[in-house]
Length: 147
Image (cartoon, rainbow, N blue to C red; front, side, top):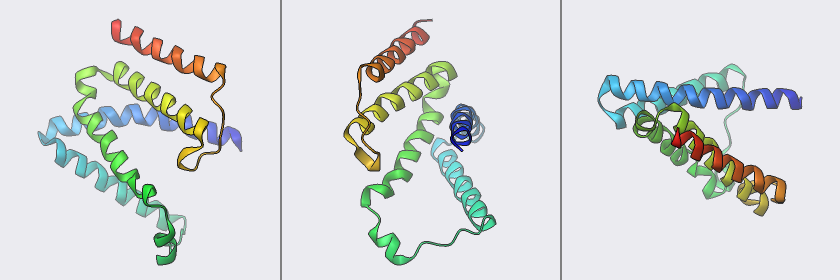
């Protein structure tokens, strides 16, 4: 089962790169970056609804919705930030640097979330090896940016 989750994470990484290019192409075609972001979000919503119905997932109850932590609802805003970055920044930076920055900043942020057990993640201390890995990724971004 762990292998399945690893494969899913790799596929998600690949699709985030593809999404960056796709979103930038949509914005170029429409000449309306915010409409492009809205269309991307609408397609995401429709696809998620179709899959939820297709697999028979039940709607959450009003009680479940009310008990959900407020910060949990910010995911849509975080997603919008990502979509807007793909639309505005990825064409200017290029796919290599853009994704290097996304992956590295995601990794450094995740090390902090793990270390402090924030946003529902179990505590995983940031030992020297994890910190060194993050620093090497930052060095890698510097190399990608320089060349």
